[in-house]
Length: 317
Image (cartoon, rainbow, N blue to C red):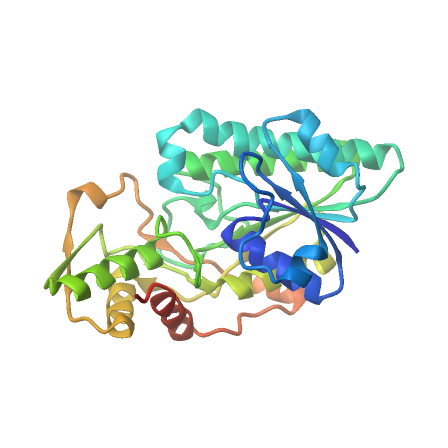
């Protein structure tokens, strides 16, 4: 199968590209222009097997050029993916996440209408689209009540892609991943951020580590399990449907911090820092994966403690 991955240079993108190569797919990687067209961590043979192209989601011509390959499938990861980044420039988040997705989906829909290909588009959204709700695993039929610019722009992306599905028959599948981590994730995200601060405390001998609120509960997966879920949805996801990518189990950020502290090897304790608090934070964000499992047979295989050890080891001096 010919697969285009947008945002291929990102944390999930590079993991997914390697997994697609192992599965024997032909690969095109869309990479945001402005730097080298490289995917971090690929071996020379892997780099040689991937057609790397510049892809700017704000530019219709750039999107059209990436699609001239007529892919059988597109995994759409390119996005303003950090909540703080989205809050700093709300308009840019909407332009990339919602309008960019609309541009990509429309391009694929036109290809389908012309009879040139019948691609599937996997739109990677987020579990945050459910917003602040009841303290139970979220289901796909729950209301979408985003409470951040990032999550709202992802709802916009879902709406835009599904409109093209209804209008052109483009096979659109929505993935709603819940938090995921692993070695190599940016410290803009909570697990590697904790690990970096704990490492600094170990070096300095500090007894405390600054943290935001530790009350929220999150559902964490390993990035490799998330990549496997995307592969499963490419093969067996039903067009027009959304699927949670989650474990169904929650852990408080307080417990996450303490487990990472054990792996880093430091006894420092967290102290709330007002600068790290988030407004309208979601207190309970856990997903029900039943629909995904029923459709594809997918289930996570990597335990959380192994995942956190990888994060701690990756951040080691």
